[in-house]
Length: 210
Image (cartoon, rainbow, N blue to C red):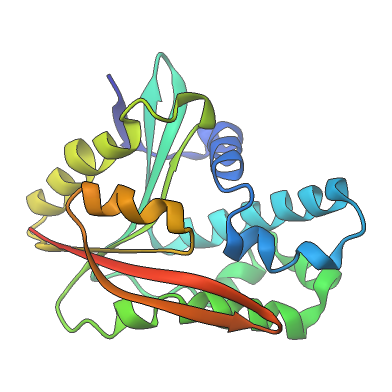
């Protein structure tokens, strides 16, 4: 049984570990910068710093919840409420991204942020008030046990409904996630291909009307 609670900084190390491991090889976070590093270990080190900065920037504006089993963080849900303000460059700058900016340069940092924004264009064009699922992560050691589906069905949907919401959106850049979201009640809004320099990435936008 997963117990969800609001994230606090005492869980940061555990939470970051789950987030990092669950998004290893995710196209938007891993694929964009893969050819910038000569070794897998350097890429991994950069990726971990990148994910740490993204996480800290995201929770400055959005709500983060952690799923606990036997005292251990096994899942993460980060959601943007309709009233939340957008995450901006300053949020990243004060969230440990200075080293990332120094490593890849301000130009490529801004390109990455622009690419991230493009993944949300379809979502942001939806006129109704929406709750946006920014991150859903499950510890790889606990995957394929229904925890991800439970996070949506038993936690996210009741959370949104109890706060008067009736629309949840989510995007993914991983094709393997498409069936997961459809199985859990989301409808595909748009499938598209995004370009970053010479690379192409799939982007799928979903909505669930409650």
